[in-house]
Image 1 (spheres, rainbow, N blue to C red):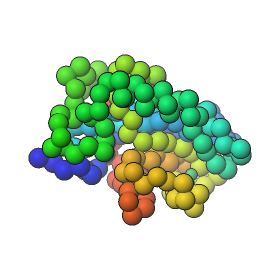
Image 2 (image 1 turned 45 degrees about the vertical axis):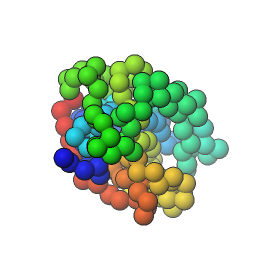
Image 3 (image 1 turned 135 degrees about the vertical axis):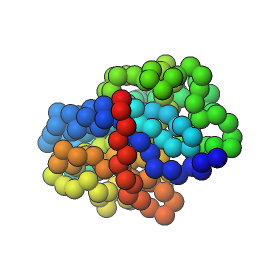
Length: 175
Ligand SMILES: [Zn+2]
């Protein structure tokens, strides 16, 4: 059985949606949620949910609107805890029967009720690189979730691990 921590997949639709959101928010930082599912121990990011950036200076920092975050966590809890990214594969199925591999929500659309789990967060660096800033590292909860950082029209994925940020290869998938 594959173990957790396998490299995640990012659908082309979710990637395009993040790049578009970063452009729309410029010169502010865009931010929001990474949604998707866990299949065979690997996350698959299939959609994003843009959130308001409520940071005091949104050109330099991001802070996801807590209302968006709370709604996503509540929706996840109401569907049951069986598919969170922090669970090991030995603890149950990673994919619910209600969601086939081709039935994910359209990229960038709201995904309530679609069976998505909260896999992590994205934000953009309008004037920087797609690497975590010192502020990002200081604020990161180190809970193993994924961070996507958008800069210069590209997206790079990181895992917010116990030892700090780990850069991940970008495995693109259809969808
Ligand atoms: Zn940042």
